[in-house]
Length: 168
Image (tube, rainbow, N blue to C red; front, side, top):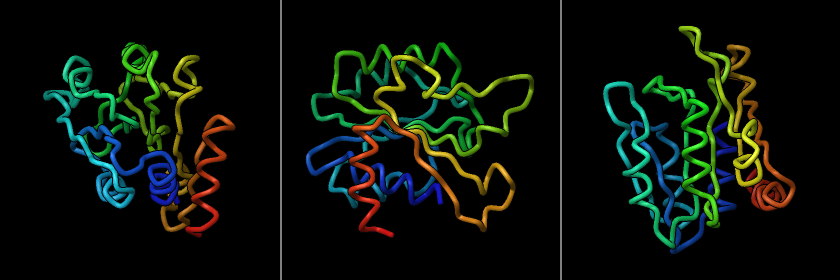
């Protein structure tokens, strides 16, 4: 399912010596997957109220060892949704770097209060450096199906398939 796609993406893209930024509260599989890849998790709290990303704090946490930033939108359990302005901030933060983005978007269809889900795949600049993870189980309210997917540019997808081939 989506958890395997997340594990595969982290295993393919993060390596010993790398740092991976994770915003908390977070889905419980992110940090263990980062550790299993031999990378170092760098956890940053989501700002309350609203569970928003503090972009200045995030910018300060990025180092030459930062390989991956994990976002979860809509966020579970914080319920925040990244806005187009957030996507622009993420693009500015990763511009002119080798930092990749893993976007867990399994709750993309569960957005309320008139808000709309904005995928990193819909952002021209982020689409070329991102892996988007989704879940048919979440979408169709059948989580026991364990059918997830990962969407990525061809070069990144090739790396994911190298790991996926030996973990299934």
